[in-house]
Image (cartoon, rainbow, N blue to C red):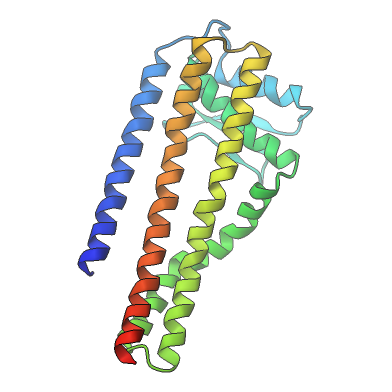
Length: 232
């Protein structure tokens, strides 16, 4: 736990709190704004799925707040209780975003396919990457231990790749959502601006996660390079 790493952890905590707070406050604000259409999140989700000729995706409620997600393995779109039955601008924006992921899945959107295939790889890297790096550093980076440290970096890098590939997936889903809501007339004028604010706030959580992961990766790279130079 060097001072530099503690700073990175502090930045990570700060970004997490700020982005999470922004999402909650923005969602709460536009949850109070009812859409003119009167449609609920579930209504909009089913309508968009039908408009895109997707008939094998189920839409069902799930407990919690901001727990909305699309499960490609079972082709199920799960909307949180504040979204499923609400006709608010926030609810319709979130519902349309999740349908965006279902459309990505149906059209075999390349970044989504890559992210799905990368999940087990990133899972392994996040579980043992740190351990392998620390063992290599603890052994003094001589001979095989240096190789072990770099293997640890490579393993940790798999999680960074996952956070980076998540960005185009999430931004594309939001783009699809806003375009569909506007062209269909479900949301109009300031309602579109409200939905965009909700989705942009949510997107920033992914940006923050990618930035923190990249900072951590660079820290370990420079840490190992520094230790390697010290031993030369």
